[in-house]
Image (cartoon, rainbow, N blue to C red):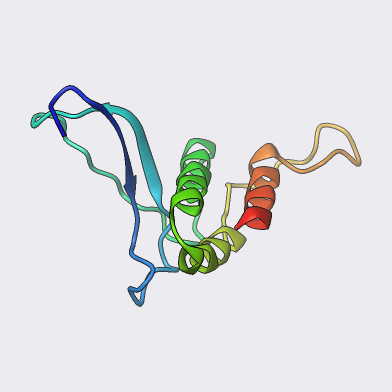
Length: 113
């Protein structure tokens, strides 16, 4: 790929590894390819706290992976997403209103894997 191209990079564990269900994937978008651009991510362990920004990152990475990977990946994405934690529970603004958007998005994504 020529320097200066815009790329998207997904950090993930391969689904054939024995710890594939232990880590959430991460996504870096709109990166300009260059030898001097450092790319580093610390993957969030499945079932541990992630702030909203990391939660959105995890959902985006799972969405991209589900779109480009085979059925084998969907099994792992479902396992990972079923354990997503988005921080402390925040009560709904109004009684009877749906839970937070992050949890709702995760449930919808799990329905498509």
